[in-house]
Image (cartoon, rainbow over all chains, first blue to last red; front, side, top):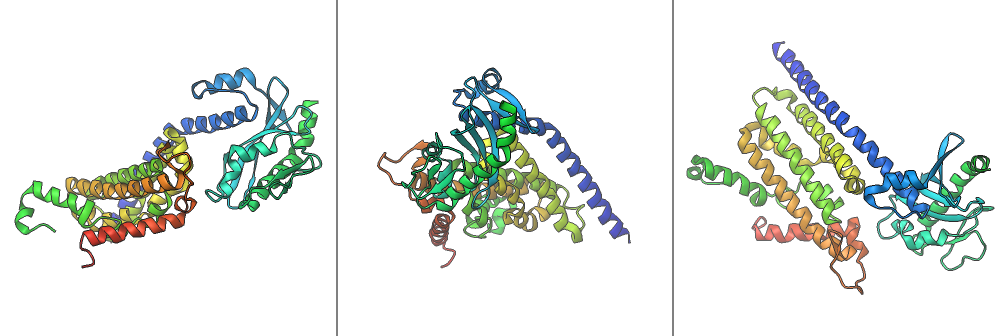
Length: 193
Length: 208
């Protein structure tokens, strides 16, 4: 009996001490982690809006050049030229894809986009996040909807070339953008009118 | 192991413990532990260094706790004790990386949490820390951590150079270099880790 009580006491004490240590570490690092997340978002918005920035002065550049608006309870971002950007998220082929999509002031075309997180196959699907692929979206019409077509086959205004060897990830990215546009476009139109 | 005469001198014993960890009972090629993470995070040198440092830190912290408490830890719950001690320090490493090295945390994120399941930790706790003094356990933890880190970095140097054409992000291959994508993916790690185990086991005379 005494053994069992000691056993219980040991697990209890050990657990309490370690939990206390974890709470302390969490309290110490939580603000820094939150700040890192915020910086990541700001970096992505600035890049999508084509505002040059330096790592050390991201926050000031952001505050000086970006207007944060509210559309349907979710923020959107606007630069001096009226380009509208918002964060998008969805499921890629293998995992979540997150980034920022920027639209021309008339909300009719893609201005640019950036990807801050993706888990596609390294070297294949992961190329959807490379600049050379993202550039294919620039100036494409979002109406009626973006379409992913085989590489080199883009004809209509809303066609985007897929990456050969990464068709499914390319399609997934276009699908994510369309889904996010469908959800946000009405409220963005409302808010930017 | 060292001869009984050598064991009587404390310095020799420490050296023996150290050598056992980094070579004779090397965690990867001799104990064949920690293979999963060495396959997963050895694609870039910086990831390998961060992962190695994380595992080494958790090993050292666990060594202090378990060796320090070894007379108090009740035998029947010792596994649970190892688990909660290891888990606590792994969470600390994860938070630390996320707060101070966000890009690395982004790259190896899920694998940091998986240090908990790295068999090197449970293996050393059960095989060494629970029956040895704190200083000896620290040496053993350090040696195993270094053995693991060195292997990861070595494999990562090859994988990053050939798979991405860079080392620590610096270009090492000429402009015309075509990346061997397979080496930056998991299958490439299987080739290299198995080659590494084959060569080192032959050198160490393990299969003789």
